[in-house]
Image (tube, one colour):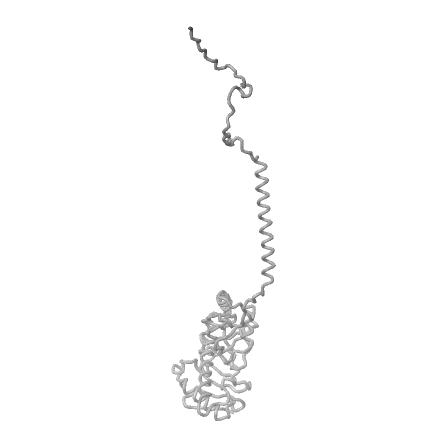
Length: 325
């Protein structure tokens, strides 16, 4: 009996249900893996769109800042405003003779009477005060209540008129513009040779004016001593002196006439002082102490006045007092 030979099915032979298969393959039941998007598939932003978006962003930021500042400004305006602290000037230990005219001149130079109470004010005031010739060694300090000025005040000892203006001179021969003064006597120097005034705040190099200043300084010191004595004088002797004549300083007009002469305010009495301070011995005159003692003795004995008693009072002769009627 012969065996039936098995035949192999062709690979591409179709079965009865092959029509149910797509492309001849069995449909897979596994879910497909998600497909990754490639970079070249990402949406692109053009240059013009990028610029437009950037400008829009900056505009939005600017609008936001503006709105914020407006809100902040309204908030600040609702807060109570703190006033800046200001204060007046305060002069530390001014001299008794300093009048209101001097204070007004100081305020005018500074430009105001009230100042901010901060650190910068001290420097600003110090710079402006340097322009005032009658002040020296100025120190400015700002306190919680004042702007304090401590300084040395140049006391006027004599005055001089030049070029239609009047000037003062202190004990260091510093010249400065004259201001009204009523509490001290400031005799006028007449007969000096210089015709033009030096700059205020500088030393006046005039020997004849120096001689007058030194004599006025000696009399002012003696007035202070006599005012503090047990039997004080009722008023300063210097109050009765109108001026000091230096026309014959160093005998430049006549060696026989007194070099310095005090003019009394009655316009008649002359006090012959003689040589400049420190030069009496050279001219064989009474020394300066004797002259001062003799003059004040005469002043006290005649009721604290020099007026209307003698035409002249000679102080040049040693130990002598010669009033001539």
